[in-house]
Length: 209
Image (cartoon, rainbow, N blue to C red; front, side, top):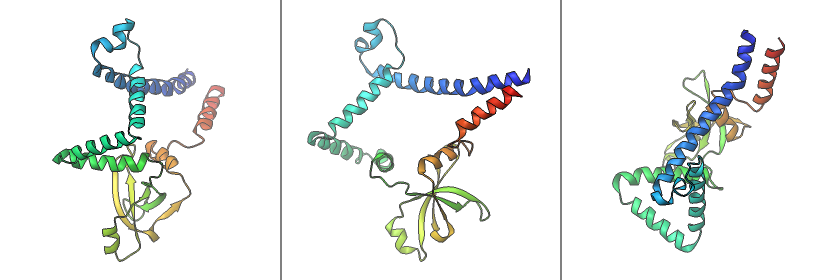
C-alpha cells in the first residue's frame, strides 16, 4: 500500500504544483482585462469568461510597445516618459534602478552576469555560487588589489542576495552557464540537467520493488 501511495505522489505532486502555478499566473494576468471598458471585455460580447485572454492581451501590449518604441516617434515618447519618471523624487530612484537591471538582464548585449564563480561565503571554510558583475570605476581605482565585483544570490529567490568585492585570486571560475547556476540556486541544489532521467528511474524502482 505504501509503495502505491508514494507512486501516486510522484505522479500528482509535480503536476498539481505546475497546474497551481499556471492558474496563479493566468488568473493574475487576466486581471489586466479589468483595465478595458466593460463593453470591451470578452465576457460582454462572448457571454462567457474565457481564462487566459488576459495573457494574450498582455503579450499584445508588450509586442505593440516594442514595435512603437523602435521608431523615431516612439523613442521620443520613451525619452519623455523617462524624463518624467526622473523628476519624481522617490519614483526616480526605484525606476532608474529597476530599469538598469532590466536593461542589463534582458537586452541582447547585456553583461549583468559575466561568469559563474565560487566564492568563500558565509565563512572562509565554505563556498557559494556567485556571479561576476560590473565593478564601479570609482571603487576599482581605490582598491589596491585585483578585485572583482560578485553578486551572491539567495535560495530559493535569486532576485535577492549580496553584492561584494572580492580578490579575484580567491575565487574559482566555473565552466557553467548562468542559466544552469540559476537552476541550482532556485531548486536549492536539487535540480540538474538529468533530473527527468532520475525521476523516471525513481518511479520505475518504486513500481517494480
